[in-house]
Amino acid sequence: MSNPSLLILPGDGIGQEVMAEVRRVIDWFGAKRDMQFDVSEDLVGGAAYDKHGVPLHDDTMAKAQEVDAVLLGAVGGPAYDDLDFSVKPERGLLRLRKEMDLFANLRPAQCFDALSDFSSLKKELVAGLDIMIVRELTSGVYFGEPRGIHMEDNMRVGINTQRYTEAEIERGARAAFEMAMKRDKKLCSMEKANVMESGILWRDVVTEVHADYPEVELSHMYADNGAMQLVRAPKQFDVIYTDNLFGDILSDCAAMLTGSLGMLPSASLGAPMENGRPKAMYEPVHGSAPDIMGQGKANPIACILSFAMALRYSFDEGADATRLEAAIEKVLADGVRTGDLLSDENSTAVSTSGMTDAILEALDASL
Ligand code: IPM
Ligand code: MG
Image 1 (tube, protein in one colour):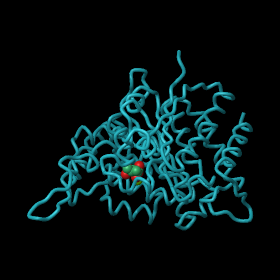
Image 2: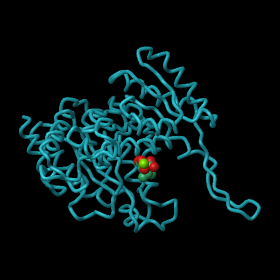
Image 3: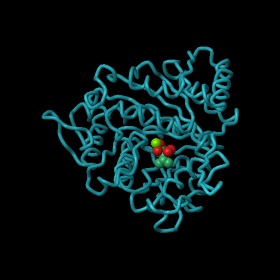
Image 4: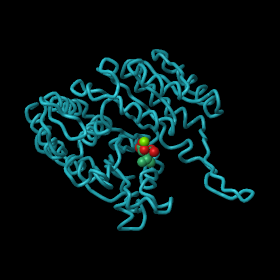
């Protein structure tokens, strides 16, 4: 059987630096755990625009459809702010999500013990926090038609459309219930059924799907209340299921509970391919951070944890995913810190590659 294939799309800004570190981790698993991957690399975002005049070349899109998993860094940067909307770096990312049909975006927000002091919330509210947000990723207001800016009575009007079919709500809901079954069997669905018809449908469909998962305790919450509850008492949640736009906002909110955006991975999963693996793309939740790019300051952990998610969800290597996560936890407990994680007298400040050095050492020690 041929090796599983990985397409690496570092993208822009710190995406390139952190992905270089992930490649070192991939090489470690090749050398020490006999897990060989066929790795190829290509351009996305501003980097693709610079070369091809589009944020994602058709050839890259075709490759992404064929590989077992895509690993993406980050896209965007000030150099691209004035580009036409249709070729902005973000359009490359959105095209990948849409055309690969990656409808279930898993965004874990986990607070590492060693970092519970860095949260903007009180330590006792976040210590041990472990939430999974399942965000619908291929529909809703991000993609709904009609959209655009047009003139009406001499005035500009901007339009976007929140649109969900029951099939779209249902497949994401199944992913969320399945996730809850593997965790604490609690699911909270968030929408705005008090003001949006799409929210009423969302609530109805999630309730219908619940019939197939009677062991899961289901609750519903308006998304604004959800935002409030996330900062009031975040540990009340296990799995949250929500739409594309609410999920974008609530996941940033949940991310910050953990202390740093530099720590959070994500997985975007679609339907199973012929070989049984889901269509999949893995990316850190953080952006391209142009202000710190090229200085060795970026935290590679979110991107490395995204590779751990790939091991778990694409390659069925849950034990090695846990090995990698445990190595990271160990390094943090030892006080190894990149600049985004404020350090104190008990910690050691390291560069981007210094963090990976420490992680690889901890991996060696795990054998
Ligand atoms: C995210 C990002 C993207 C989104 C942007 C970069 C298009 O904020 O993945 O959360 O809005 O989905
Ligand atoms: Mg976002």
